[in-house]
Amino acid sequence: MPTAKTQNFTDDEILLADFAKALSHPARIKIMKILSEINACMCGELVTLLPLAQATVSQHLKELKRVGLISGDIDGPKVCYCVNVTALQKVTKDFQNYFTKLNEGDNLSCKTKKK
Amino acid sequence: MPTAKTQNFTDDEILLADFAKALSHPARIKIMKILSEINACMCGELVTLLPLAQATVSQHLKELKRVGLISGDIDGPKVCYCVNVTALQKVTKDFQNYFTKLNEGDNLSCKTKKK
DNA sequence: TCACTTTATCGTATATTTACGATAAACGAT
DNA sequence: ATCGTTTATCGTAAATATACGATAAAGTGA
Image: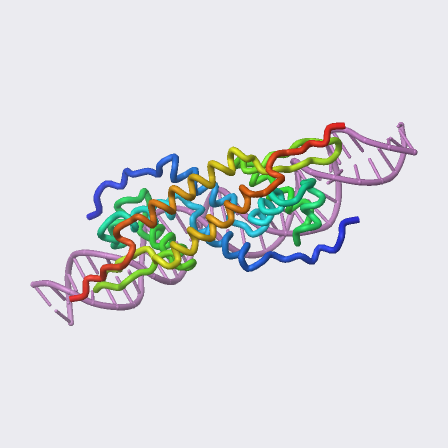
């Protein structure tokens, strides 16, 4: 019989998974790229650069805002979206630490116990 | 009126989003950690280490297998899961490149055009 | 005030995800 | 052959995600 199943997930695991979720759609991968590259970040421009309707782009922006990766500055009737540098640095570091640890693991290759 | 909306997503964007999706659940974040650390990788052990039922763990393993991050060696009635080193290196590099480019962007902070 | 622009939200439809119990399949041991 | 162990799959339920048209909200400018 299996031992007691009390172990929950840590805050770190939940946070990293949440960041990954925010980046788990090509549109959001691309939005982050565009916002970091283009010197103009109105929602309307994003809509023309993506194969999606305005309402859908707005939803993706909301998801990126939810985890803090971007923020929007209201500028008259427009909204200027931009990358949140602090959050970007945090997610960069978190993923880097995670992958570094995985790569350092000593059980990466299968040690199939052939008999 | 917006310009033609012909732009699709690139293979790179789709692939990275897919890797992110595979890591978008705390259970799968943790499974990768466990498999890289622990010198024994039976599915049954994973079940005892996670607050989830066996069927659910099996589903999460399937998702990680789908993107190639892990593989399972059948060993009698058991299955020995392990991290796929090549895929891990690829996902590590892909995320690193992505975040590096984002951080290099010249439009990270909002230049709200106040009038 | 009245259009016009821009973006968020609502309503809705569809698909996917997550979770679990039950069962099947595959193997080892007796 | 039968039993116990281990894991995948099936069936199902509930929640979440994705997409879009329509509409609301908020500001600009005539």
